[in-house]
Image (cartoon, rainbow over all chains, first blue to last red; front, side, top):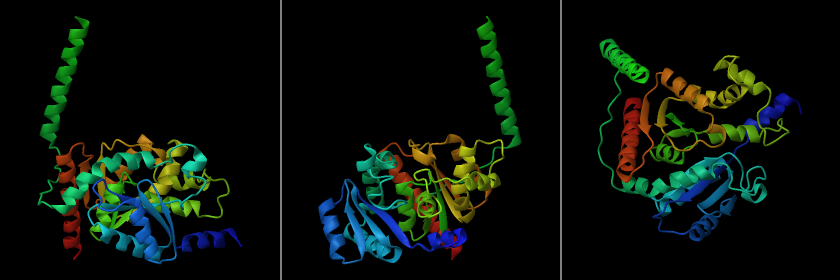
Length: 159
Length: 148
């Protein structure tokens, strides 16, 4: 197969990996989630993880699984794409001997998921203020002020 | 609509966009193309010598090859985007998003595109998080209205 054809094969690849993350206030456990995913009887690889589960397979089936999983607890189940398949030796914690790349970020964002779930449950109306451009006059004033303060601090340093 | 996010692998942003019925353009999908490519034979180093060359479209030759290599992955996301959500001051900078200069360049290009953009700050408290979620949802609803 020529390199060009190889490249085409890669882009036709239709498999996806999806992380299903349970928020801190989730009403189901990881085990229950994995059990429910198995009960869907979709041709997927399902892996139980500390944050929830990971599903890998054809995009169509992965989307179906994610849609159904979200319905289990709409406000507390979050999902995210993952580049690598589950258990890939390049990323798997077992082979690396340390947390995989991306776990630290997940850990940080996990702390906010409880509040995110609350916000989703009780939506409020907010207005988005569009940032305005700074006018030339304002900008000139800012420059003058900063120049003055830097000159003053120089005089103080010298004195 | 296709919405680019920054940080490009954020769980919260990607999830909220998908909940609103839009498509989140995430970094992982670009990475998947790389790791599935049979031409790459030395994983986990998935960048080939072609990538910094592709990155020349976004950064000059004097720019470090690491930035250009990263831009060859981020670049297509920025070009494909129809809207963007930029989260400033995110406390994470791990892996391939750990390059400050690339991050600045990405934000610059997203702003330069002139697409509807929402700029927010990474929340630190409960109130800030709730406001952030509501702002994102309002922004996404507005996109829908504009788009019909």
